[in-house]
Length: 397
Image (cartoon, rainbow, N blue to C red; front, side, top):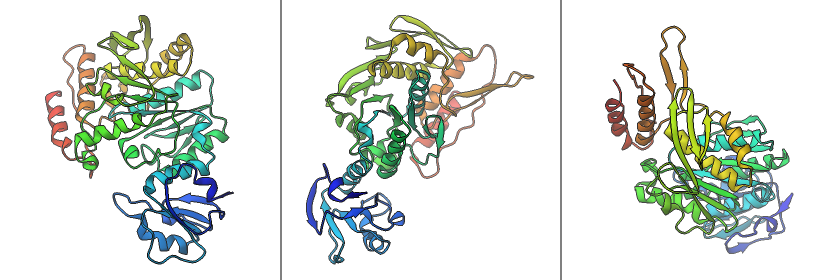
């Protein structure tokens, strides 16, 4: 059990009303999850304002409230802490409550429009192959040493995220690899976390239903790198025209990967077919089981991160050569009778769909027809729907 004072470390406090020596049983940002002796953080979200549920949280047993706007009437026996940013405070306090789990393992974050899941999953599989106990936080699934924990968001809320990292520590994990979405950065879900490294894959138009403008989307991604410490590493794809922008203001060690120009981690595709990718990485030829130029980029990012984490280059390449990507990312099967190739891919942006269809075109050996079935999420960014339809029509038969 911890007191309020124990978990206020690094929280920006404006005012305090009541005792901070009170013992709390947990930190919550969802009033429905509040129980006896909880500390409730009232966060102003996109859909709801936690300040509206302060009274309900107290009714359910909250002994402390953290908020930006103090309520006009304060209940006796409840401690109120005013802060300038509740979302930031929630992340920092959750990190403190769970004994600062990110400081006890090496946490690596992956951000970008496309490739996050594959890169994070490949890192998890690679370090497992290298003999480490590892954790994974991704869109597809969360994993702790091979055990699956259900996934609900690309990046969980601050409380769930720190609880998950604490589980990883308790299970003996030395490394954790996680997707970091632009929503998570903007909503301060990763506040308080200490990252050993960060990777940028690429950026294309997406999530404009949330960020409204492309510049705001870029700013959110860049904010992740801006928050890294000098002891961390930051690896970017410099073939993406905004790759260099991501590292402009970071204090971390700056590194790059590329298929087209000089970089710290330089790759070249030699052959790309259904049997896999043959490519060179820093002049060493290797064969991989994955397919497509986009996966060549993913492999380079993973290789760069592993080397930056001090792993042996030869062992890394040996493990990667036998590793498969994430589920639902260019998964394919070939019917034995008709030799029809069916491919399933998560491609959810115009750029991702172009990459997949371009890869399929390169795999064609004759007059095979390409039939594409594409869909876009219901209430998400509507601007990309007609573009994705156009891409599908242009690159399909």
